[in-house]
Length: 547
Image (tube, rainbow, N blue to C red; front, side, top):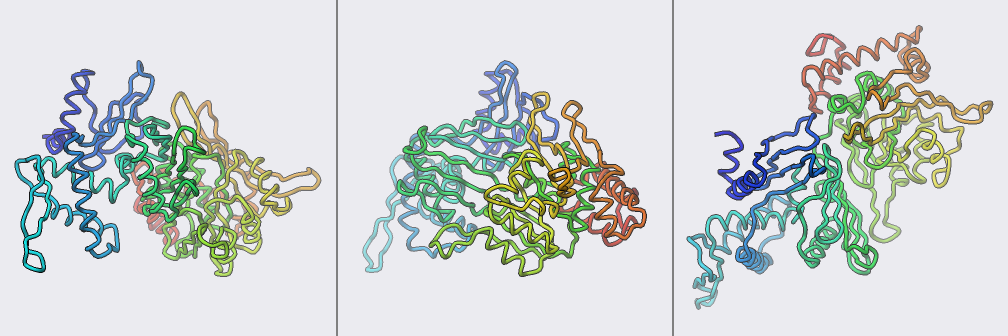
């Protein structure tokens, strides 16, 4: 019996769905536990995301779209009534239980109260009444909801989904291939898929009341309750995902809405980004040299261009024993280093108790870090970041600008207001973009630009494009070979090279190491980081493969 057949045997609702789908389309989905890099434009794929939930990605040229179908065990009207009754019984019992200190304890408590609230048998419509002695010795009535084993399994899933999980959007929360979730009104839930971009799902909240209840619950989880008087909330959920809620039909005409940016528990590695074509080995080797030698880099691009993903992937190039401070509104940065201080802004509460990025950046500077990472530069903290660079503290940050010229315009204009003569404290700008190539949604680094400096005689800042992406061929070219200001005038001198062009040998050696990891299928973030650390300590001789 293969995995697909076993999954249908464990989950009767999946078998029912597949049988119906086969009858309607005369096709069977391909069962895939992991989506590969090269997928068809119009898939017919079934993805398990943890029993009893499955995702069906289905599209045809005739439909000219991809459908995202979440498969959960369906509830009959009678089962929904029983679910509501069980929830009420659990709510009645919960005040007598200790307050759970963690999500694990909450799950255990719900399982316990669920067990006390039901009786499993062959079924039956009425609740069971059981006589038990009370404190005075008289009989007391304890209600229990009768369930069949199948009803028990279904209700157990929905209890955890709705109380501990994410409610109706739980299936897409489980899907590791999603980036953003966007919902407008009751039944318009869309996702941005890592492979298929924007897709409408088959999920919904059913009624306005359920949507309102869900939004209030989520806003309480982020510590910023919404109401008609305070209809907008923004913050991070316990798993690190970021959510923005607009809770009012007065200001959102189509109904209450939310946007959720999913948090990835494991960072994508630089090798994965190379495999996906976002950058090539030489570009990654260039960034390796830059970050190993204390250069400041901004990862710049438009929304959803992959800035934070690229930043996280490159953090493995910072020397192992560095002291790192990260400053963010929402925790997304994940350095693999032992000495890492994570600072988060506090935007709620009384005015004098709030802590913004600017304040955290000033506090970090007093701690003499080797690197400062700013989740996003967009205001007064930008000037402080450049002051940090001037005093020898390398800064890595993300920035919203689609080209180096626009980035410099934003940095030198309101509200950041950095003097144009200070711009050369930033060494490198990596420009990222989400693009469509031959109908496919891709993320590409379209250029890596070096900031040489401000020259009065040319009336502006001089930059050099060391790498450029060609959209026609989808190939990156190394334009900075034997012409890199950062490699020759900065890093080669730090390394003590008399012949500064020897630095290119270092770059190409690192490119070969990255390429060998790629060829050998070494793409897990921790494994990649381990090899980079080994090379830093022992050189080529310490590598687990020849280069």
